[in-house]
Amino acid sequence: EAQVTQNPRYLITVTGKKLTVTCSQNMNHEYMSWYRQDPGLGLRQIYYSMNVEVTDKGDVPEGYKVSRKEKRNFPLILESPSPNQTSLYFCASSFSTRVNEQFFGPGTRLTVL
Amino acid sequence: AQSVAQPEDQVNVAEGNPLTVKCTYSVSGNPYLFWYVQYPNRGLQFLLKYITGDNLVKGSYGFEAEFNKSQTSFHLKKPSALVSDSALYFCAVRDSNSGYALNFGKGTSLLVTP
Image (cartoon, rainbow over all chains, first blue to last red):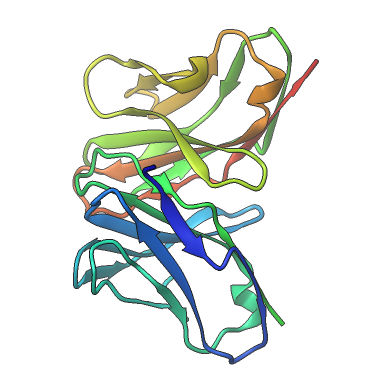
C-alpha cells in the first residue's frame, strides 16, 4: 500500500530534550515536506526537500532541522524543543513537479512541557 | 509572494443542500491550486487541483471547484451535501514563478446537519 508513515504518533516531552520525528514514504517520491498545524493558523510549511541532500526552508523553520540522506526518509529534528513547538506535525510527499498533489502522513501530536 | 485566504472559519449546510467553501489566492505568476480535506484525527487527503485548462475541475467524493482568474478565486462546491462531508477543508497554492513551497489557507470547518 502506498503510504507516508510517521513515528511516533504521539509524543510528550520536556523542554530542551532533543527529539526526532521520522517520516518515510514508499512511493519513490522526490519531494518531501514537513508542516505544523495549529488552531486558527492552518498548515504552515517548516522545511521541504526536492531530493536527496536538497532541502529548503519553509515559512517557519526556526527551531527545526531536517536531513534527506535517503530518498524515502525525511526526519524532523528538534534539537532543543520549547513549549511553542507544541503542535500537530504532518509529513507529506509527492513527485517533484509543481503540479503534483501531496500525500500526507497521519500526523504526530507533540507536546512540549 | 504567494498566499491563499479562506474567509470563512466555518460553513454550515443542511444535508441535501449545495455547499460552497471559499478560497482566494495571490500569486505573481500562474497559480497551481489544490483542495484537501481533513477528517478528525486523520491526515489531509487530496480532493482536486487546478493546473490549467477547463475552469471547472471535478474531484473526489462528488466535489468540484471553479477557477476564476479575474476574481482570483478557487471555490469548492458540491451540489448536494452529505453529513459525511463534515470535515476541515484546506485550499493551497503554488506560484509558477516561485519555488516548490506550498501555502495553505487556515482551513474552513464544514458542518453538514441532517
